[in-house]
Length: 121
Length: 107
Image 1 (cartoon, each protein chain N blue to C red):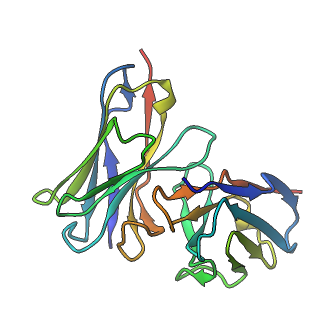
Image 2 (cartoon, rainbow over the protein chains, first blue to last red; image 1 turned 30 degrees about the horizontal axis):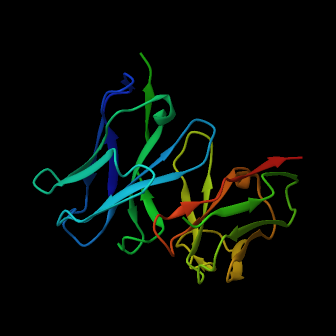
């Protein structure tokens, strides 16, 4: 059974860097999928952050592109998100997810449980 | 970016009701449209893709239709477990974008 699990600090100070990891179990990240990050501010809608292929090819939401880096660690079977210069507007539930058929533009059929990151001093 | 506008933003319904939610894209998205259900505190669950394709394991009371810029999610007979928030998503253009959500509440 394929599972995704997000991990990382739940509290980040303003202007610092948010770092999260998504551990993938039951499926190799090298097996032809674009792995994605999506976030959801409390009580609000969903925003796609970006996606990465196991070769390192990335696609980012232009609204966040200047602050986002997504990377993949094939040896650990995980991928990561870094978002720098955070503000309170970055407070959100952060999900990692796998698309249905693996394309960079594709609905997500497998999601992690999500991890809440609060930006506050 | 392609803007996705859902309506209504919320609705009240009873068990057994037929419910429809619409999603309008700011440009044509050629049926590259998905629908998700999200319950409180849970990750979204994919219901439909390609505007009308039912995801495996999703009950047949959920259906989707539409083309061009206008799409509809229909629940033929609302069940107690269907009270949730529903989101549409376009994946025709990057960045893929979501509607603002429709909350289906108990009347």
